[in-house]
Length: 279
Image (cartoon, rainbow, N blue to C red; front, side, top):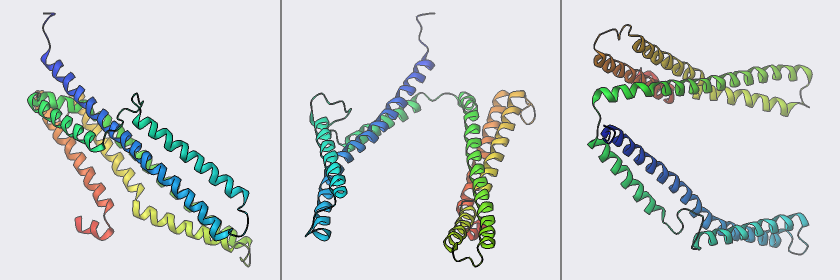
């Protein structure tokens, strides 16, 4: 009947509304923190600028005139900070402030966020969908997870290639500069800089291991995509006639792959000795 309501749809909309409220409160807390920081930091910066200006005058130019450039920079800074302080005070205390939460403590917004999250948890518990629906919903979120893994894999792969090219160019430049300048006294600074660059890049590549991270992420993404394709096509290991069993096996397998990926990340974050003990 047209007049009948869909309880599943109503529950979904309710949970989505809770999500929106939580996201809105999180953003409001960030904005309010910036506002409070500006209210306190701008006057402090104004006072510090005046103190530094006066200190420079006393220490360096007590018996002479302060350079025009110093006076101009300090004057412009003091004027800007004074205007910013006045504007922020007006926005904070005027009745029709464009700020969303004027004169509202951050802890009050945090309390609202905690209550909103608690309401969301309670509503989710009261209207928990069946396991099959949750598994089907989980399957629909997997393509986004695959895209995320591949995006991170590309990031680390590009970082690894950038490091390698810097190493190649710096190593070649050291040889070229050494051969060009003999004795190398005029280019001593260049050689020191190139040597330091090679050392830093080598150490960073060995510590952060971008190549290994890119490989692990790409491998996990490929494995997840392979299982997703197998489920959609109904081929092994998801060729059983029981759709519920296939979804359960799929969710178990994907969570296992994600757990394995997290374990690899933890191993890469540990020192070499710690990795050997874990392995």
